[in-house]
Length: 125
Image 1 (cartoon, helix red, strand yellow):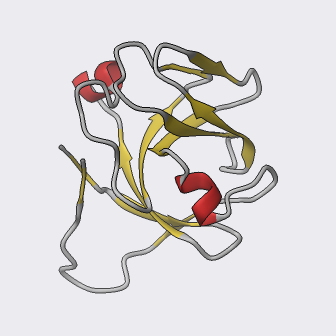
Image 2: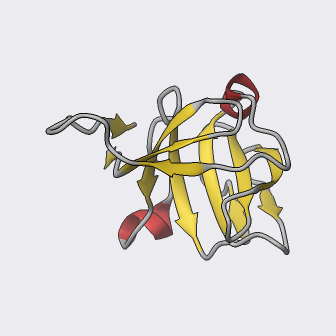
């Protein structure tokens, strides 16, 4: 289980809880995990390619440039690979979540400052 470390807002107004993949989580990703919750994502920084090897479910992959602009949105099936040569980062979301949130190429994601003191973070499953 990964804890949400920040929130990002899309141009369409959708708020996404983002957990940064570090250490072992970066290697493992969502393998042997449940799909992320609604409006929750796992961020891979300095990442142009992700795989679905050993995954038991499909995910949406949102490739971002350095300024957090959406370059491409792709549905990644288990045992497949998705890549974007121009990407700087990749977000993994629950299958169908990118469409539900209205994430499209050209949209920009903006990190949001916490709005409430002491707000509890939520977990990505």
